[in-house]
Image: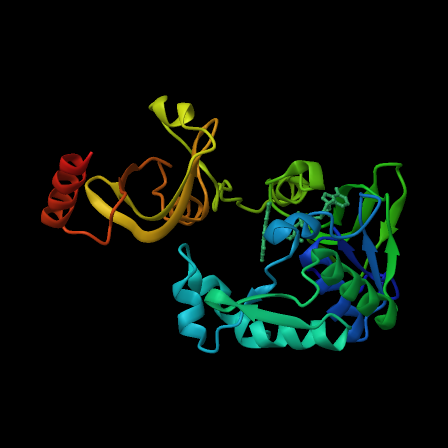
Length: 294
Ligand SMILES: Cc1cc2nc3c(=O)[nH]c(=O)nc-3n(C[C@H](O)[C@H](O)[C@H](O)COP(=O)(O)OP(=O)(O)OC[C@H]3O[C@@H](n4cnc5c(N)ncnc54)[C@H](O)[C@@H]3O)c2cc1C
């Protein structure tokens, strides 16, 4: 966000992108007293929010201790420190409650709207935007952020319309699920305006396997197993839970969680323990007994 006063002091704060981040940024910019314009290229706000948490939106993790919370963030958790200090998980839940979307906390302290509808999270934020007086323009794709003498002056829409701004907040998302609108525009603008952009890497995803046999098991779910991921012989992940085989390899909760611990190469060796509750000897005895009985 860049502020300056070269004759556009009365121009609004412009927020580009009406996803979760953009709605929150616009809401708080307006609550802070700034005239705020939210520009979204889609026909509606929060298109990605609708598909989160399998349509239920896992809003946050109701974790009381910040250090516990940050321990669950595999990459660069310190980056989140100051933001979370100012607005933590319980502030988020209180905000949603205030805006008419009460939440509940489930296993693993995962918080969801009581209604189990992700759309209610967007509706609540839309209500907040209305109450705070934010002007929302839908179907308004931004072509670029304009700058003069190293300072941001506003944005230009795809139709050529120039919109001056006192400050521009870019909330155009990453590059996952581009069908929801996140096509990496903000990353391009950052590069164009001289910022260094660290190439984004996927996280929380299913994994392709080099071997083809897992694809032959497509649709098979394994429960109560232990999945261990190793990189260069070192264990990077080992947990009990559920996984499944897919047309590209493996997925499901354990694999998705394991994916965010992968090294930069994006490669790891996975091993499965189908009977993690048994020792080798116990398993041997059980198999011998079962085979004898067969
Ligand atoms: C399948 C799935 C499930 C998920 N489940 C969860 C979950 O349960 N809990 C959770 O916390 N997170 C979840 N996430 C992650 C979460 O959805 C994202 O972290 C979050 O939505 C990112 O919000 P954002 O506002 O940064 O970006 P986005 O939601 O991508 O929003 C960016 C917005 O900017 C707009 N935009 C882009 N370019 C322009 C432009 N040039 N002009 C105008 N507008 C533009 C886009 O149309 C879009 O609306 C999930 C993600 C996926 C894909």
